[in-house]
Length: 512
Image (cartoon, rainbow, N blue to C red; front, side, top):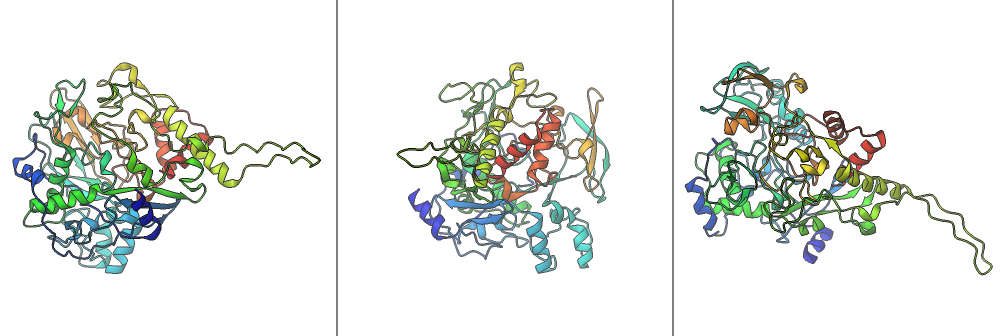
């Protein structure tokens, strides 16, 4: 860690990963990828220059700066992560350090302008709103890639599973492409940092493989749900991304898979400074990536349903504990009484930075402890114990000081509901084969993998660290500002946040 601290101060460089795959879902880990788990890693060959060279120095964003550190202390630019494949994309095409290891619309717009839309990220297969879009002129390109340019969304084309419990009865696609053969699902590239705390790969878990032989099983699940390791999932995902998003004619070698995944696992990213609150490690605070890397994680840590799988401890809702030392910093200093002939001093008002820090600390406590009722959330109501319907933010964002979920449990909070549809999104009407019930959604989510009616609209719980660096938010980029996210959940669950609580909770999220 001392080495990392030196690097953070002096500079260096770092890297990223590949966007999600479009591979067909599989019930068990494919044998072809298993060999990669034990494959030796020979020296990698020189790689093509990435879109962005990571720096290991703080990178400015709208609320201060974020910092990435690497557990190796350096970045291997010859890593397969930086290698261009197929259509010219590398992993770094869709995952960039300056954008929280995802991509943001403002950066994509700059890349579009600088290259007249010829940067490899602008590929018809999934960068465009439709693979049939016209791109002969610059104006046609702007229209073709509008979802990527305005919301940072990649098009994921998936077919409804043949054995699905539902049928697609109607499609309203503004781009004229989606059909029963292939739905167009627009999703944000997941960040490829902080993977130590990952339990679910991809928004819809289509790269999270079941494995009946595994001991990584969700307690109380009926039937018992057991999973391959996330290491295995990531190896498979890297190959799927190269053959899918990068359109490579051949898949990665086992050594390339291993190299990419090992590289990704070295990265830790978090906000390190705040415009309002200053350095996030001052005054006893434990913000930043160095402290983040110290956090413990394993399958089932602090599980909302049965507690901790290893220690046996009950679920602890006090998940976030980075800014406890900032509580009460907005109080005036007490007056100093006179002593030994010296006059007393009046109390002093708090400084602006201490007022900001106290707001962050209050937001952390709201995140941990503000109760609300959870209703109508598939994956939560009906599957977890009734007593858990009274929840806080940490009921889903339950991994300590990270905010991810320690088992592959996906939830439907209504983000893809038809009521939230914007005109740029396709809308799909699905009918339950058994009951005839009809549902409209912009993205069926997990159901496109499992085919289950109850999985429609269910998505993974994302990590919250470095969230300020990678707007817009939700799987579909539907919220631009963190204040919008807070207000969405306040309305969705009728939490009843006061205006000050909305400010405090937002300020807390900004410094993660």
